[in-house]
Image (tube, rainbow, N blue to C red):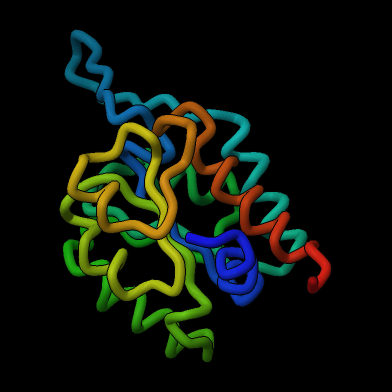
Length: 169
């Protein structure tokens, strides 16, 4: 994608939606002896949510996972919305567009696996961490340099925020 086209598309972004496992985390699940599941999040991604919020960008999570950890993380980051156990992410995005009165070309999505295919195709801009599945990498508009759970969401947010600050050529 040409840089000029990329910047013009990113300037239109009003909402950012992210997947969780494989994007905000490395996709690993940590189990204790008691069967408790834990996930590791990157603080750089957390700061990205604050920067997006300060820029007036609506943001949230749509995940197929049903973990309370996801809801807690979204609450801690003060996200506008968190939806878990959603398999049809595209339809949920369309509902959100209607709710917030924006068009799908104003939405940026970051995902990494086949359950993200529909929303990737429908969003105005899509990206994937460097370690996303090969079929997702072929599908998205932009492949990030960083891996999931290692600051990929921060890289994604910085890309959007930089474009919004860019002056027209």
